[in-house]
Length: 378
Image (cartoon, rainbow, N blue to C red):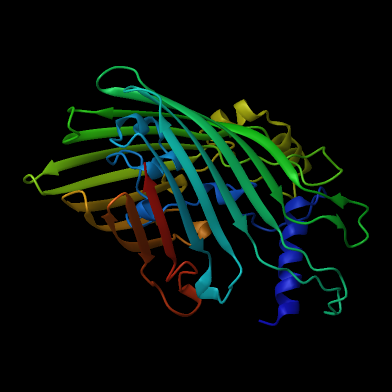
C-alpha cells in the first residue's frame, strides 16, 4: 500500500469510530469494540511468552500490569522494570510500538504499593484529501495510561489489589472533512480490582486469580459530547498449578479466560438501537454485556490463554503458550507463543516471540511479534 492509501484508511477508521452520524448498514456484524483497546495488550514479555497468561501464575514483578494482588508474595523488597513491544511489525509498520515502565515497593511483609506507565504509539500518519493528495498536516497519534496501586494480604492464602488509572488518548486533533466537528484528545479515569488465592505457603500446588480491569468512565474525542465511548472493562479468571520437581527444578501450568464487559455494537441502521447503546450508564453496560439482547453469545465473547513455564534455580526460564479468541467476526484469532528469561545478579531479562501463523490474507498480523523486558531488583 502507498502512504496515501494508508492515510485514507486511517482517516476512514477514525471518522467511522468517532462520527456521531448514523450510517445505514446491511447485515450488521455484532462485535464488542471500545476506545483505548491498547489497554488489552499485555505489555510484559513473561506473559507474552505464555499466550498472555498471567492471572494465576506465581508472582513476578510484571504483575503490576495485571494481577497486582500477587505483589506482596515477591521476595524482593522493590524493583523497577521496563518493557518494549514493536507492534504489527509483520505488516511493515516500523513506528508503532507499546512501551511500559513500572515500580513496586513492599511496605511490610503483607502490603506493597506500585506504579506503572504504558505508552502506545500509532506512528506517523500522513493525511490526504479525497484525491489522494497529501496536503494536510501529518500527526502522530498516541495513547498512555498511568497507574497507582496498593496490594495487601487478607490472610495467609488470599490477597487483594486495587489500582487507580488515568487514561489519555490522542488519536487526531483539529477539524477534517468539513463536518464541523473538532477532534481532540480523550481522557478518563478507571480502576482495577484483583484477587489471588494460593493453596500452600511456598506457592506449590493450585493458584487462582481474579481480575476486574478498566472499570471506569466513558471517553469522548470531539466537541460533540452527546455520544461517549466505552473503555474495555474486562473480567478475567485464571487457575494455575506449580509442581516442584526438586530443589532446582519446577514447572507451572495455567489457564486464563477473559471476557470484555462491554455491550455489542449497535445496528447503525436503527436510530433507536444507537441511542439505546450510547445512553447506557457505565455500570449498567457491564451487566448488559451478559444480556443476550445487548451482549455477545458466551461462545463468541471469550478469550483463553493456556501456558506453561519451566524454572531452573529461579535463574533460567523457558515458556510456551497458546491464545485463542473465539469471535468469528474478528477472525477467530489464535496463535502460539514462546519465551525465555534469565536472571543475572539483581537483573532479570525476559523475551517472548509470537510464532507466525496462517498465510496470504489469513496471515496473523501479529506474527513475529517480539516483546522485550528487564527487571532490576533492589
